[in-house]
Length: 114
Picture 1 (tube, rainbow, N blue to C red):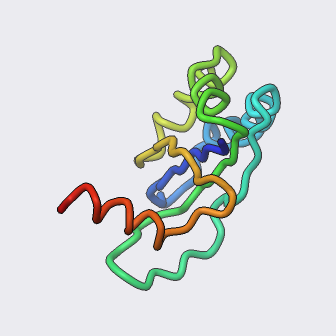
Picture 2 (cartoon, rainbow, N blue to C red):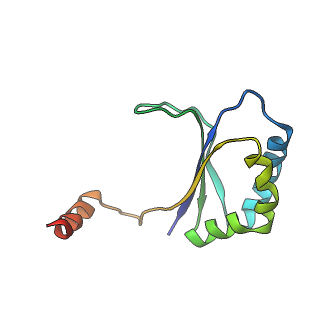
Picture 3 (cartoon, rainbow, N blue to C red):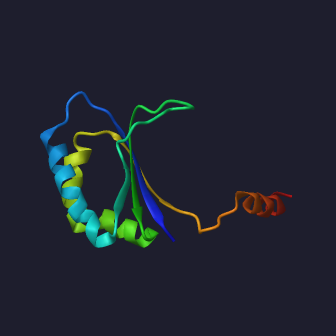
């Protein structure tokens, strides 16, 4: 099942040169795990709450691919280039099956909570 790596990174006054190096090297680290950017700092239209930063969304074929990417030597080697200069959160989350039906999900949850 498809998985996603979602990062919320806070904006900074200046972009540190190490962040630029990270950006130059990230795709080569993603490629062996079939990771591809779906969102990379695009415009954020906040409709509820606050969102002080950028969104990065990377798609992987599976949770295993996403975890293996994050734990890979190639990514761990460049991770400090970002983490030392940008604050934020990063999660890996499993996607839904094709044809996901939230109403059917609600019906199943109702059975459990009764």
